[in-house]
Image (tube, rainbow, N blue to C red):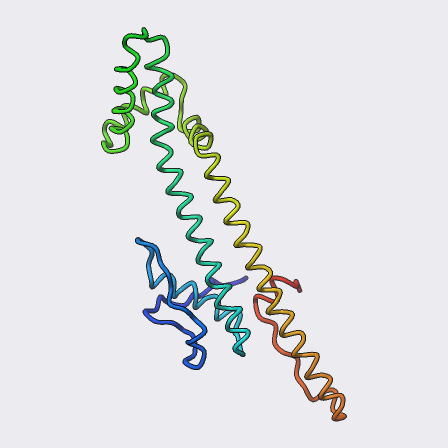
Length: 216
């Protein structure tokens, strides 16, 4: 049975060797992002790839950056869904409170609905009362979540595009690492063959990244 994966502990500084530090730009974090978390992700990627040359370090640094970007996109997407949940509550309340209201009172009903949705966001007691009222009309949490996705569908498509693009670039870089190492191994075998010692060069070890891409 496989044991738990031991991730590197958060660090306050970069794990890039001093001779390659010039290749690694300082992290560009957004407000609320954690520098220790960033370095922990970076260290996990570097330990897995185990870069040996400047080119491999450049590729590993870009892979770590893309991995951080993907985490960022997922966090922001989740925050987006939370933000749009208030809008979904407002839209659902409008279906209950505004439909059928006389034209003269519709503006007042709209303002009342907006205030109720804001109360749902800011007041836990008001949120429970509003959700209970919505359930009585058949709008449970699943119905509200569906409304969230309807309201946020366009910007969710943007995040999906960003995630897919980062994932594709990361896979291409991982393949580039494998290609670079395969080319180096072939060169070493050729040198050994020319010297008459075909078995004198050990094959480079396969990293976890290689195994994930190439299979057993």
